[in-house]
Length: 190
Image (cartoon, rainbow, N blue to C red):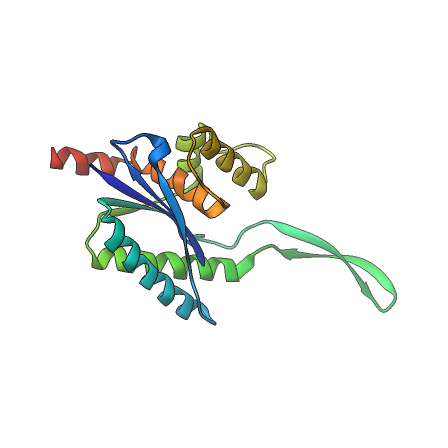
């Protein structure tokens, strides 16, 4: 019974448990919520939650969505009034805090997984979406469009999810079964 745990690593980490010998509708999902006043304490509380999750589920393989590696290029425009004159300013959306948070949370998860010596791999969003949805890119789609598509796919498969974090974790766990490292692990166990 190879058990894959998919993780959408963030301050609210979605998780999904996928038994590759069972029906897809048997996938269980939930959320680990971090607590704390700064990234380090949030990462520490997420690590404690990960310990509980590993002890309760005993996964054979874990797949984590790859953290944000660089600042998002998306730009946001807003109107600003300065000294009676209105002008448009541009700023980056998400920015450095998103990069720091993403890497801190995924780092905390990876450290705990490593301490338990459970094989794991990170997977890019475009890769797991291609496996789960059948396509990894879609011209013109924004974040909300991807979230909606993933939730809809979970609904079609009769997988109970109540938020986007859980839905993404389901897609990540599903895609984990097609990773070369998972297939090699299965072949060694046979």
